[in-house]
Image (cartoon, rainbow, N blue to C red):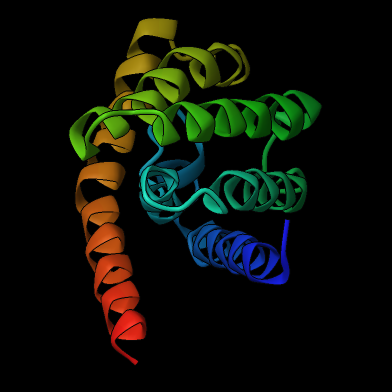
Amino acid sequence: MNTKYLTKSSLIAAIYIILVLIQIPMGNLAFGPIQLRFAEGLTLLPFVEQAAIPGLFAGCLVSNLILASYSSFGLIDILGGSLVTLIAAYLTSKMPNKFAAALPPIILNGLIVSIWVSYFTKVPYWITVLGISGGEIASVALFGTIVLSAYDKMKNHLEKQ
């Protein structure tokens, strides 16, 4: 790991944390059985940037630590949610195209995070899966596309200098 890699990773973590924090007033729309999170748009970054893998993990971990005082999900969300993000980021980095790259965060968050969210909210599991997966699809498709586009433009601009 070099300084450039660590800087990119840290910036991605910081952006993830900020995007989560600005959504705290949205309550259950961002952190309950429906999770439309702006920060999840960053989950496509590992497809084009390896430093995003630890960056997303660190950002999710710190965000979940902060959110522990706002939710009743506790340690399982802090550790489990962060590990799901790490695994999804790694798998995203191995995908052949950006459409396939969207699948790991959508599928893993939808199926795994729904386990404890359903348990703590008492919302049936499959309804929670639909809510979290739907939020992930929207976040990744809308915000993720914007993030990848901005990343490509910024990278191209920096390469020309």
